[in-house]
Structures are given as C-alpha cells and as structure tokens.
Length: 162
Image: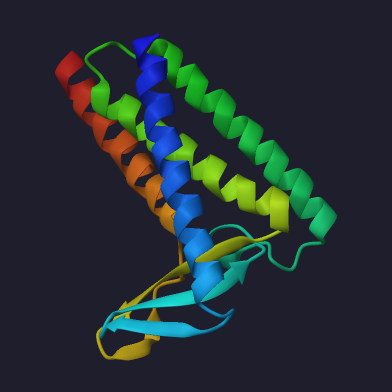
C-alpha cells in the first residue's frame, strides 16, 4: 500500500499544480498573448488540440478523443503494472511513476473538458524567439521528468541487480 500512497500523493500534487497554473494563465493572459519573463523564457497562452509538439492536431476531433482515451487507459495499465512489481528500494522509479501519472491526468482533464491542452511555457534560444522549443505546461514537464527518471532508474537498478 505504501507504493500506491506515494504515487497518489505525487500525482495529486502534479495535477493540482498543473491545473492551478493553467487556470492562472487562462484567467490572466489573453489567448495568444505573451509575457516576456527572461531573454529565453515567456509565458504564452496557447491551446494544443493535438498531442506532444502539436502532433495529431489536424485529426478529426472525435477520432482524437478515442485515441486519447485509449492512450490514457494504456498509461494507467502500464503504471499499475510496474507499480505492483516494484520493490521497496525502488523509490525513484515509484516517484517517477507518480510524475507520469499526475501529468497524464492533468493533461487528460483539459483534453476531456475542453478538447485541447493549455500550453504556456515558452523557452527559446536567448534573444531569438524564432528558435523556440515547442510550448509546454506543468503536466508535460512532469511526464518528461518522470519518463527520464524511469529510464535512469531502470538502468541503475539493472546494474545493481547484476
């Protein structure tokens, strides 16, 4: 049960932070507007109807919805599959699963409620907004950090086992 509790707490915190930041952006930054923060970072209010990097945005909306549902269910199944098999010492892997789960839930809330995900973090080469990394949000960040942590944890755990 401890495995599940830490995953749920981390997931809850990610969803809370994700939804709070998206709400703040929607409430205070007009759509398609930008607030300059640093020479390499902006808050930009965007809507992404697709998946990562805007892929699938041109797909018919009803097809996208079914695709999201299938992917979300698969993510849940994979997370709980790994969670059931983790050993107590595999804390990083467990926390990473919580990040991925929280990010998936945070973005799914937007997709199912609005048909798009609010992205607002814009990072680019200092002084050159043309060299922009695709905008993202807190949920995307949690998924990315969680996935990288899972890979690193899996490699380190495998090395420890052998």
